[in-house]
Amino acid sequence: MLMIRLARVGARKQPYYRVVVIEKDRARNGRSVEVVGTYNPRTSPASVNLKVERIEYWKGKGAQLSDRVGKLLKSNPSAAGQPPAPKAGPDGDTDAAAA
Image 1 (cartoon, rainbow, N blue to C red):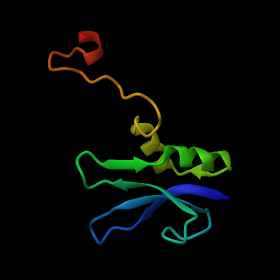
Image 2 (cartoon, rainbow, N blue to C red):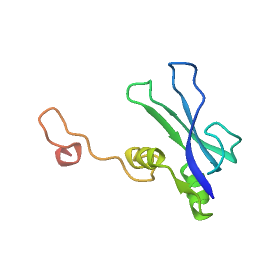
Image 3 (cartoon, rainbow, N blue to C red):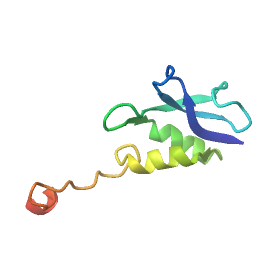
Image 4 (cartoon, rainbow, N blue to C red):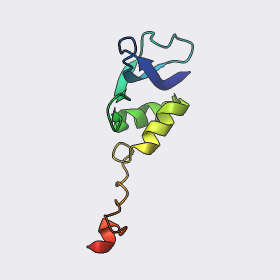
């Protein structure tokens, strides 16, 4: 069974992750089938780059998302193919309501 999960590639105390398609039984950093994105939790806010079309392709082939990758996909609206939520202005109104 294929999984889409994180593989750590950063140095000690400097985590950086690749989002990879990999066989479920393989080691965390084992040989992957394809790299479909990156995740850097050290930036503020954390940077997430995902190839959504490739993730959808592999999901169609039966690959399962790990919990963390599922959360990253949901929390990153631009990567999930959804429009970003309207931001609240300084007076509490949303940009969409002010326009």
